[in-house]
Length: 591
Image 1 (cartoon, helix red, strand yellow):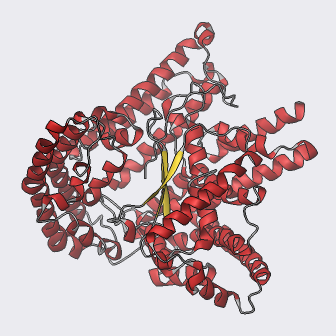
Image 2 (spheres, helix red, strand yellow):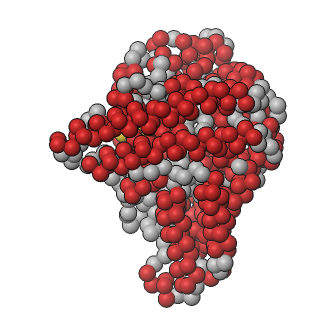
Image 3 (cartoon, rainbow, N blue to C red):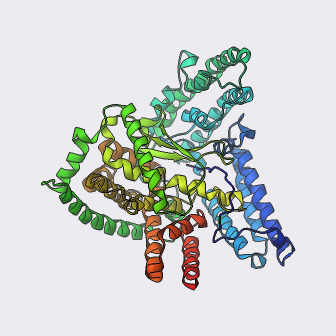
């Protein structure tokens, strides 16, 4: 999922020095000017080509439209990516400042990967069990709906929805022809998602929700007209398009989906998986090596689990302890409302302890919200949605309240540390505080860095004194084990012939996650191959860099300064992070 970040300007120091005004007269200024112009034009192109991402970033200029999924538009975007890479490489990198060279290298990495992945024709699978045109209403969560124009933009989007659905259908038909199809076990979840859009009463449509209440900026005289038009558009355009899409999906698409779960079953699938492993981890590690790392981490964490289990006083085996944690009523709230209140209380407990591990606290606030009901059954335990890039919308930590009887309270602390603070909210909010950095750097989302930071943030709970309860400590180990298990099952399914059932069993045997979460997680790894590898690989690198700094600096090591330095670098490939932290260590030793 693309993540977009709120914009906050500060004078915070960073290892990556920004371009200063007086540098325009320095040698290489023309190359620097050309580089910044390319960054600006490509950022603007990205917003125009992906109106949904513009909306998530808080840019309302394109709120009346969707991304053009026509083949000509897709081919044009791919050509623009290739041209941008050529343009970048025409700039003389050697004449750039160190800061600009870093920005150049990160931008080149992104463009090169975008061009390299074109050969895999990912657009032929335009929907997943976790989202697509069938859940297009979800974007309303981040739209302002503050005045009449916001509502009229939404109506324009609704009027254009049939075209988006038709374009999606055309891509899916081409996927059938080219045998580039998703796994059937995932697509069997989609009919219920489409059915949620097919209503007899337009006021019951998910797309109508913004019209249930109006902001003060919408005159009373306009409200009934807006409601009336919304009902008309939904009844006459939106619902009929989804009925047509449902018939196509059930009759033509679902029967052609593949029985295999491995991405290696796709055309050029083995090469595709190796590409994805490298792309998500930002390393040159292959599937076999990642699998070995996973097995070693699982063994290490399991030994620690045994020790913490004994601290609780539980007398049975580790598998019996897992069953106890998954089933004893004392670990579960009885209602969605109580579960949400518990999540919010956990977040408030974390907030005052952050000063123990950071000098710099981001200025953007965050809130805790429930995951929308229509996607909750098929999605993960929680996720983070960054705020608007102009700071007009806070970040939100979304929590899954579906079936509270399968949402144990002992997992709340590590989950909140990861998804909210000091995990993703700190990483995304602080990213935009990089002084004068180009927007692509402020909003960057390299999965290994960003998710590695989230997993590292879970472990900062020890430094903040938040794991005094052994059950919370075991929850932290369960979450770390979860990410280690991913290395094994993701590579196992996509590279080593593992079945879905084998992956589920391995997960269940090694982590105390509930069955609801385990099945959803395994299906997520099937649907997004390689992405789950990045978490543990990124955390291992950040933890390695911390240990290196502690050894080099001894008593002078300042954890708060180290954590600030990692975030000051911004989201980058792991090799770039390592280079920056080594430079930071050297600077600390000189001081």
